[in-house]
Length: 611
Image 1 (cartoon, rainbow, N blue to C red):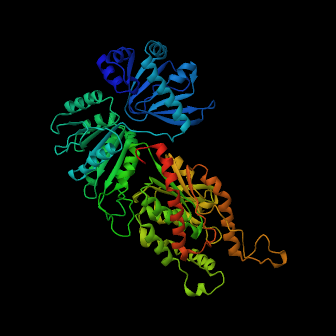
Image 2: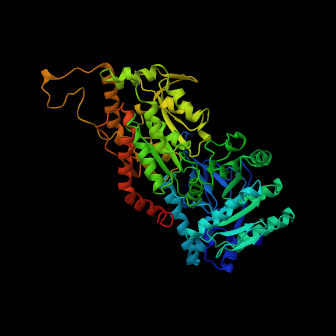
Image 3: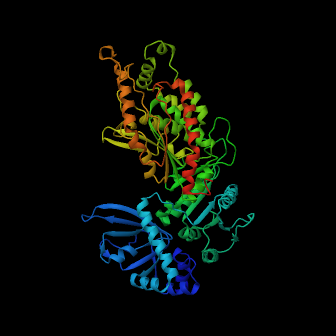
């Protein structure tokens, strides 16, 4: 058992740079605690007397108030500690710890820990860093960098093996030195990257033991990549998943169905493992919409779509950039882009998206309100921004009869809403695709008049997600669906930066097209004499109210953002979709101007990634 405790402790950050003799001394004071899913080593209102060192797994930590209501939940993962602060207080803690997946910890008496700290300054140093990280994690409220150390990559076939080699090469470019264990007999060594060959023909016990030994031998390595064929037995897979911090499950259009049975068997063993599994779709370059595949995508934590092939004309770089999104996740970075509402002025978003893409700023997630939802969802579906501009001009140019009317653009917009034309217009491009099939994760914001609450769409019909979010009150009736009456999300959240923060983005860019407002209404200005002021039509009043509301809510929406792009397009009418190219160009120009400042901020998060 002592040897077992030594091997476990050797893998924890608190043993960094410690001698084997000191690690053995500390390990002798520890107990090994193994928890199956659902087990609770700490009950509510029990006093802490020990410090727990997380070796692998995931523990849900729930905090209650004096009435027994949940006031906070966070998770403890490999490399962290819990109990030190509560044990220092020495009183019953209103806290519960429950294993989300098979978890292994080392438990050490708090007073013994204090003695070891006083006796060994090098251990005290490591322990102090752990405490500081605990406090930092609480302060960051989910926006801290979580960098997985042990990354396991499973392949359904030989076709996806190229992914691992490219990933390790990219990490090496970012000044990492990942250590690789692989059963790929054709693995090509990468200069400066240690690798260990696992025989695909050895038995489970031998393979598991070899991996565990390498975990100890390479305990000082900042990153370990284990690259395996997923046809290994469920028992072997379970043993490997226990120590994995992140799993990348690689599939293609041709073989994903072959993974379903293995995947489901894994989740039967421990449903909590779904939280660490990411599906990686490696697709042909001309594939805009991935399979829905709920058997894989629904239970997994996240899915990525990527391609190593050049996309065809009129298709965005979304699939090519999918590879870099995986790199972002392994580096603890998630960049969100919030696209605000503003009717036709949202055409500037297309220029913003184009400029970010041109300058290699890869966005991991998009959230949009109203026209921000429309431009965002279409972009995430793979449509190229410049092509989108032309499509909007073609689809939203008023017929001649509206062009002959005073304020014809306003009446045309009303007609489009009342005749339900937006759904068929958008289905030409999106068909019946679901949000979860799109290349980039995207959310839309709408409002339910029944509950009075904002609704965040993360999955479901992509066209519905748009039409609900752009559904302007008065111009159109609420969309009744599933017990909800849905209208434009700009009523409560015009620039949804907060939804991206809540979804785990630790750097959020807000794109607002409603910050500036032209001081004129119905040809009336502040200096217009009262007797000469003109009366506005009802439709003009409704749309002007929408503009004023968006402008006044703008500061609220962008508040959680780390960086704001606000092109001034106040001179454009909110119905002028025919000038989409001009507004997109203004958005592109403004973004290009801000790129150096944006890169400077991103470098503070990860200098090698954004140099």
